Image (cartoon, rainbow, N blue to C red; front, side, top):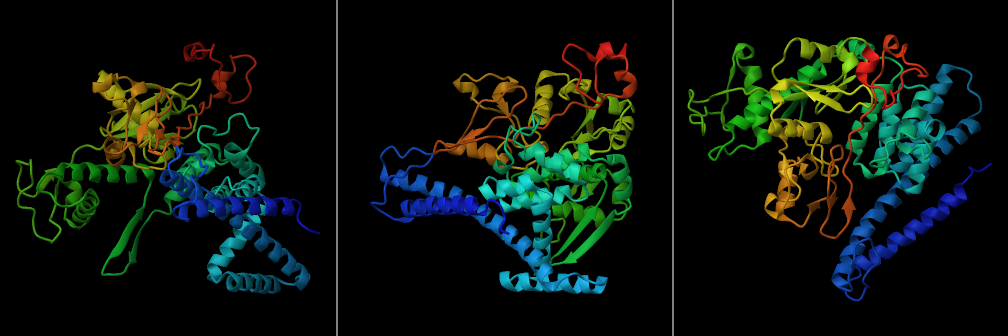
Length: 505
């Protein structure tokens, strides 16, 4: 028997391939190839029409690639099933292993890839064809790329069938009222989709993040991997609060070293500072960092520094910790959010707040809807509060696909002050330095924002690209607080008419 829907899928693929080929002809056909009919406006200009056709062709190629990947998945899964049927039932574990090795080897040779890659493809194909039907359907229709599909497979690993279906429905289900609709999964770059999927998985995993974190802490380690050209990678697997503190502390120190006479990039400065901290005796007990120049000699003069040559104090790193108010009180164990990382155990957030870490700002969230409720009083002044609010609203640079953390971004007027723009949250964005330059040196323009929505962007060709939104969720209500509230189901968002103070009385 054939697989249902194959004929329709092949016809859809043929139509997409024909449309892609037409875009290639228009975009690469040279003079006289037509003005195109893409999403951009050619305005009768042949050159503009060809440019639009090139962009349409690039978009079409992604859709065709996704459809090809879906067929590859179906063919791999079908071959594995048919090979098992041809070999007959296995009579021992050894026979089963041998059969699997034969299938993997055959697929590897057919695709000219390593057996490891072929084994991974077969495992992914099995998950997509048996556990993740919405993902496979989106891949087949070209709405989701192969990279996105792999992310979905990775993030549902370890979940039971119900958990995998819930995660999949959150991003791909057409009839789920609370799915992530602000920016469809296929319109997020794969790394940002992974971040969103992982965040949702951490919040809704059947095993609490406290228990999973306790197990994972035992796996902390330092890894050393030699590389070519006399280089090597050194990486550490650490609890998130420690890793974030190290990263932001080194970043802040690197910023202090930047100046007109400093030729090293921020990336090079981070590496040099980390190496000096790790190699210096007693560096952990010192409040300053001795930094050497790229050629190994001492940094005799650091611009803007009146301290001893080569020694720069480490500025305090700023990290936002968003904590559901009941989790901070110890009434629930739902995850908090560490800016630039994602969900962390509530115990870790409580520890950061209780220990008075000066580099962390506590952010309480409204128990009714998960929205930011209050920023620490040290940031009560309007300019500082606005900057902190932007960091909470956007979470990162709002340019589509950019993952630059909010710590490196600066507030910027969407409509320039000189052009009548106001200094309000709905007229502010926080682009990273790269996309701040893009705004001021090209025809790329940000669109309007709101108190809870970051700005999108419009390209010089007139195409609009939506920004990624934060996935705020109502926090969990402890049973002892929900009991006095009538007609409430387990762990709901409290209606707007019920204020937090009413529930606590």
